[in-house]
Structures are given as C-alpha cells and as structure tokens.
Length: 386
Ligand SMILES: [Zn+2]
Image 1: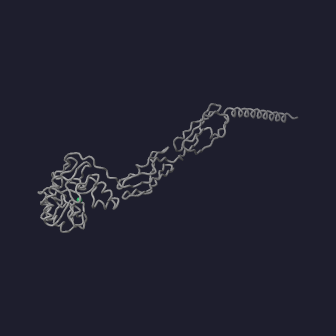
Image 2 (image 1 turned 45 degrees about the horizontal axis):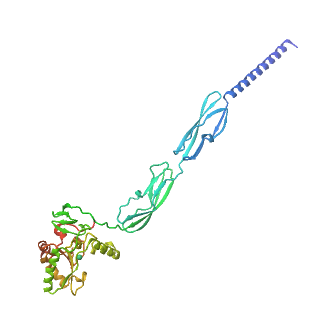
C-alpha cells in the first residue's frame, strides 16, 4: 500500500472516532438536559362555572409530568372572568406560570319577599315598590318593574305582576292582588280644646268641649266636626224657642212638630251607613251627614213636620207651612240652615224642614230680609269633607 493512501485511511478513521465521540457527548448532553429541564403541564385554558359552585383548580389540569404544581384556590362567590394562575416548578427549580381563564356566571334569580294579597283603601296613594322586598346573591341594585300602575280610584281587586331582574338577566316574577276597599270612617273621639285659627272673614275658630265654635257660634258641617261624646238631647233654648214658634204657627193654621231632633253620634253613624249601603257613599254624602258632622248631634237642630204634609222630604218644599217657617223662624232664633241654591256653600241640598237655633240676633242677620244666607257665607268657612 503506498504511503499516501495509508495516511488518508488513518485520517478517515480518526474523523469517524471524533464524530462518534461527539455524538456520544451530544447524546449524553441531551439525556442530561431532558432529565433536568423537560416537563409536561397541560390544562384547560378556558372554563365556565356557576356562582358558588365548588371548584378545585386540580380538576382543570389534564397532564403533569416532571414538575411540582401549586394549585391555586378558586373563588366562585362573585361573578365575572377570573385568572387562575398555576405555578409550576420543574426539576431545575425553575418556576413557570400558567393562566386559566375562569368565567363565573350568576345563574341564581333574585329573591322576592311579598304577600300575595294586600288590602288598600280607595284614594290611597300606593307606592308599589313598598310592597315587595327584593334581594339577590350578587346584585344590590335590582331592576324592579310591574305590568301596570294600581288605580285606587274605585273599589275592586287588581292583580299586578312584578318582575325583578339582576344584572345577569336572571329574573323572578311575583303577583300581588290588591283589594281596593272603601276606607272606614274612624270615630272622632278626640277634639282637643284650643284656638284652631281664623276664618276667611277673620272670625276666630275655637274647639271647646268636643265641638267647634266660630265667633262663639257652634258649627257642625262637613268641615267642622263634633266628638263622638258630644251632645245629650235638645238644648233647653232650642226646645223653648220651638215651643214659642209652635204656638204662633198653630195660630197661623199650621200644626207643626219636631220630626227629628237630637241624634247621637252612634245613631247618626247607623243612619249614614245604611244610606251608604243603599245609595253609595257619594250620593249619601249629598243628603246625609257622616257621624260627627250632623247638626242634629248639636242639640240645636230640628227637622220640622206639619200635620197633613209629608215629613222630612223634598215634597215639603214650597208648601204653605214650609213657606211660613221660612218667613217666620228667625223671629224665634231659628235659621233655615240649608237654603235653596246654596249647596256649594252648605254641602247639602235644599231642606225646607231643617232649622238650626242660633239665637234671635244672628238669626235675623242670616234671614237677610227673606234672602237666607248661609252660616258658611256669613262666617267665611267651608263645608267639605277632607
Ligand atoms: Zn235635619
């Protein structure tokens, strides 16, 4: 073999050995690296759960190799998108972090605390929101709506549907039936003594002994009331004045008598309630007084009847005895209390039979030469239920 060829062969051999050594070194290096740094950590990247759902961050990890993992706690008590961060330590003690997107959804509807049926009164101002209590696991500001407003202008049963929504659009529905009832009129038991004020004409209004006085004249009408304890029969002056008038009426050819005199609070209450049952409250209020508002409770008012004529009815209006009373009653201290055409002042229709004792001085002023004026106009006061 020539010398040159031998040298070439040796070089090739040497090169191969070096390559083998390099390969072995690389392989060893690879094995070393793989042992020290290689690891696997696979997990779900996005997860949706319900609010307050019990969740373990371990459950979303799919594969783990050659690392230690610190599993974070997961708070699902509030809704929204949260970052769950896993800290992974490999065998070289190097730390790596991985973030899971966790969406917590509120799927719980708001809670409604309310009655199914509620009693309210005609004319009440009703705030519908005050009849339901709402709460929610998450939201403090809830959207409350109802299908219609409540009309309390008349009696009846009305069902209203309430809808309550939270921010995640979970909703609850509740129905309340409102029973709109007529308001019972409370008994007037207390009317404390003292000056109440002045009338539009400057007269003093004062409460004394359960009644109201204007310029020291007792007033009972739709505005001014008597306490339930007030009154115990016709007053002596009233009875005496009537007796005088009766004598003179008889001389004029009219046999008059008292058809209705004193009426107590409780008897007026019964009378009025019966009229309301028959005609309804609005109509009853035009001709009958509510308890405490009747002038008959004062002991100063009388309904006068005459023999041979219908008693305490509009057919008495314009009859000879009615005309005689209208022309002469003031001379005995009586006034025609509810004259014709003065309903808007007195609050009552014309009653030709109803007279009120006020004493001769005031009676002749109110008689007004035959053109009766009302106590309301005379003193500048109203007669309206409030
Ligand atoms: Zn009367």
